[in-house]
Image (cartoon, rainbow, N blue to C red):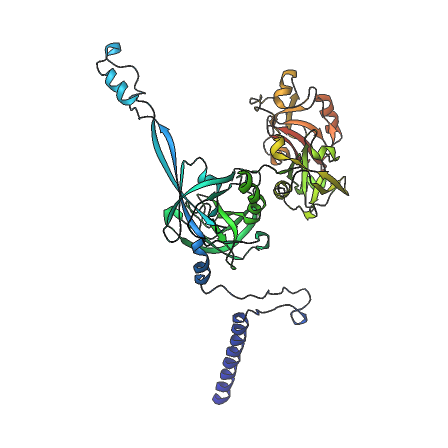
Length: 501
């Protein structure tokens, strides 16, 4: 009996070792394992082949680190001597203060010029000394010193900058061709891909960090073309302008921003965005031509989609404003349309559209696919030039805080008519809209982000030209109905939607 038990245990052990070896062999060979197919049952999850983490990034770093540079800038700033007595009030000696002349001369001396220094990173992308970095690294610099990987130092000049995308090109003159990085394709990046950042955090030259792409298309409020790659490869002050490499050793991003309070949250500009504007920066020193559609857009939330008669899962961006005489206006695009594609590219997030439009040459005919009242149509638009138009949606200064009196209506709002003298200040035509004086705490309107000072222009496509029109629109709304408001706020018009409770 003991012999039989020993044989069973040994057999099970050998079988387990055999299985472990097979799994190990498959992972080491990059074949992975599969839980799908008939054996796993209908609809079973399949495990994607997985080659495992890199054993080392040594060869990659060795091949590309000589393309990364340290950028040191000096800016001359004016400062006044600090006067510790300026807030002490009048002298106890009165106008006959014997020390007045001394302190006036010592502390109220003319402004002095003081150098202000900062550090950043960059990378060579051409053998004749052209370097890509962030605009904020070199903006306003009086002197730029570039230090190569071999410790050689050169003065650099600014070739071109673009504040909107935060990219800049600078150049050094070296006696011989320099090693340079290959620009990759950031669109090919997948969430979970390994990436390597090289830069000069805190002045510590050629520091290497590795991580994965943790998200794409991030909006962090840095500008109108927010579309960042998020990575957990450590990025710190001084990394700005440095390259983010993929496993092929290609630059896929320009390290740009961090969350000061966060850990493992770094952001890089996709290299494809930089590539679109590089020719103009190198030729003109700025971006002269940027495509312009002439619309204001916002996120298409499930509530807004339902209010437009669309599926809650509908993708696209909602147009909340069409500028007069803009390309969109001339092509017949209207406020309330939903853009689902631009030149065949599907639009899933509202921050994707500005970059796509801007990258197209002005004067080019573009195809814009829209949904209007649930019906899809394709409109051809000849794009304008954003840099030439500089059209801005603005309503001027915000209205002062309104009174907080009155009982809230069924929407959870207290509203009043627009005074004639307020119209231009609020950015609306005479006789349009009602002003929100108060939003009931805990109401659906508050949850939808309706704010005091907003001007309601439409309710469910009914134009509101005063209190009577507002009350008439309310009379048509019942509990459980979706309410879609067109609102004028300081920066332009937006749609808000919620279900009446």
